[in-house]
Length: 275
Image (tube, rainbow, N blue to C red; front, top):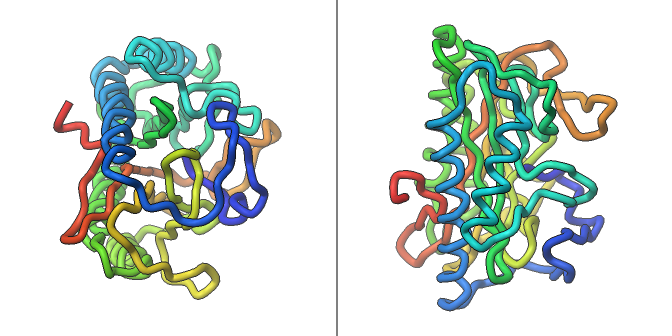
C-alpha cells in the first residue's frame, strides 16, 4: 500500500498494529524471519490472484479471495480497517492509480490494467506487495507500461545494499521511467515496513531534496513501489476519499516488493517466484 508523503507525520494507528513506533527500525534476525513468513503469505496470495483473475469477476471477488487466503495462512489482512479502509486489497483499474476500494459492482474486463496491492500481518509484522495484471489481451501501449513499471521496480531494488542511499534507488527508478517516456507519480511513496504497515523512511521514486536522503543499513525493511503514469504525473482523489486517478485519464501501473537490506545487497521478501 502506498503512503502519502506526509502521512507518517500524522502518527497513524493501523487496526492490526496498535502501537505506532517512530524512527527507522533495524530488524533482528528473529524479526526478519517472521517478516519472511508474512511476506511469503502476501506473495502467495498475489501469485494466486494473478492466476485466477479473469474477465467478468469483480474486484470484490478478488478481495474476498485474498482475505480468505490470508486468514487461512494464519495472518490478518493489513489493509482492512487501516485509516478506515474497507478492503483487504487495493484494486485499481486503468486510470485508477492507487487505493481503489473493492466493489461488487466493479467488473473486471478484458483489456484492463489491474493493480492489486495487499498486505498480511503475521506474528506482529507486516508484509506488503503490489502487482499489475494485464487482464486478457491488452493494447501494446498498456503492455509496455506494465513491463516498464516492473523493470523500474527492479532497477531500484538493484541499488539496495548497506551504505547506499535512497537517492541511489530513486534515481535509478526515475531514469528508467523517463527514458521510456512515462512519468513518476510523486504524490505517493514507498515506505519502511515491519511492526507497522507504514514506517520511516519514505522511499521516494524520483530525485528530490524535500525528503531525507537516508543511508541504508543492514536490517532495514523497505516497501519499494514505483508508480508510472502514461501521461501526467498528477493525480486527484475521488469522492470516496481513497481512490486516486490520473488527472488526464491516462493509464497507470505499479509494482511493489518488501525488500530486506543486507550488508552486500538485498533480499526480496515478497518474491513470488519462490512460492
